[in-house]
Amino acid sequence: MSELAVENKNHQAQINEFMDKVRSRIKNQPEFVQAVLEVAESVIPLIEATPKYKKAKILERMTEPDKVFMFRVSWVDDNGEVQVNRGFRIQMNGAIGPYKGGLRFHPSVNLSILKFLAFEQVFKNALTTLPMGGGKGGSNFDPKGKSDNEIMRFCQAFMSKLCPHIGPQTDVPAGDIGVGGREIGYLFGQYKRIRNEFVGVLTGKGIEYGGSFIRPEATGYGAVYFADEMLNRKNDSFEAKTVVISGSGNVAQYALEKAVELGGKVVTLSDSGGYIYDKDGISGEKFEFIMDLKNNKRGRISEYADKYGCEYHAGKTPWEVPCDIALPCATQNELNGEDAKTLLSNGCYVIAEGANMPSTPEAVVFFRESKILFAPGKAANAGGVAVSGLEMAQNAQMHPWTREDVDSKLKSIMKSIHENCVTYGSDGDYVDYVHGANIAGFIKVADAMLAQGVV
Ligand code: NDP
Image 1 (cartoon, rainbow, N blue to C red):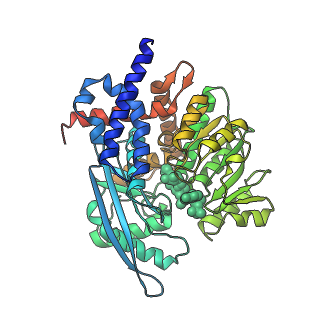
Image 2: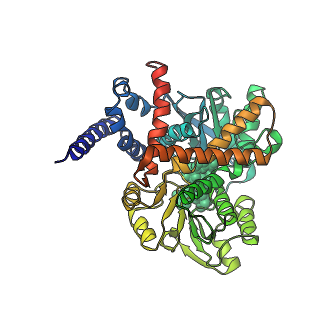
Image 3: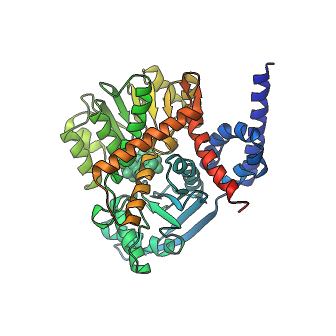
């Protein structure tokens, strides 16, 4: 066996040993364990080669949250019935700044999903170059079908419980699935009512009360900027490419807008009911229709197919549609190994994850082995939290920046994340962006943890 083969075998044994310990300590949290495994595979060889990380048990400490808050959220619906939900906030790692990460309102929310999101957030935030620790939170509350007043009452009840644990220097939540501008407004109003202070305790605020230009667009735009960087490195671009996007919420909408602006033709969008396939491309008036349908009317994506007479595939994901570029922008584990094979056999060669962990481990292995351009969410979707960081800076300065300022900062942050991935993920001409993102994020957080002692 060659020296390299022996080294790889040893690393695999060390990864297995570490993961066995994780699994015995953390029961019934499959999404969290999945996220830890992906990072462990990249960083354990580095830790083995760096005694200071090993001795300080950095990865063991990173996989245990700083703090977890769980609380009951009681509220009254429009029929006068008492409703009970569960609320969470995970403060995962605060080594490089105040905790930062979104709130998700979705019936599937549980400890495992929020811990995986918080863990990913730690690395993502480190990659942005801004001083932000990682956190995540939310509730199993389902916003679908609720009236505006019910949403407001739920947000007020949720914030009443969350309020003691957050603050502009402590923990600054933002939006995620089911939490957009409307919800952030109600949450902010309640925080202000309780604390009697107007501070930048949430990001994604309305532009009239301390929000930043480009925050709504940031995650989707950022994912496309990142994909464009990957393409440019290969002297390629979005021009005339067919793009498949999943989801039709915040991230998907602005990924679509930017992909079209750069010359791509976006042919799909989806929601939890199924996907639309518009061979002529979705842009202009059709894009305006989607924005109104999803953000104002809160309707279903099938209504687009009814209006424009395109294909609608109920209960399916869009990965069977031939494309050059795929942007998964809906939710975790929405693209499996079979989907990955179908995508590539149909000619797709660029995948940038707008969502968090949308590709299953089998899909990720396949993408990496195929050596296509594959950007993991923690790098590709970091634009959202980056502009949240810029919103915090503007709030602290009491001085808003222009749209152009923020967009150019977003672009340069995505460029620098890409460069960091290339630095740490290059293997000859091939860039393993998963590896690059994990290593770059890990080193920054690990060094900060080392400097701060055993805490
Ligand atoms: P939204 O709530 O705005 O949109 C979510 C979209 O995904 C909707 O189209 C929704 O369809 C669909 N979706 C949600 N759950 C499922 C499911 N189980 N199966 C199929 N479709 C589903 O959320 P965002 O656009 O903000 O978030 C999308 C992804 O991007 C998430 O993974 C999030 O963590 C990630 N992300 C978001 C950031 C942000 O700034 N908002 C930042 C970084 C990452 P339906 O309406 O039918 O449920």
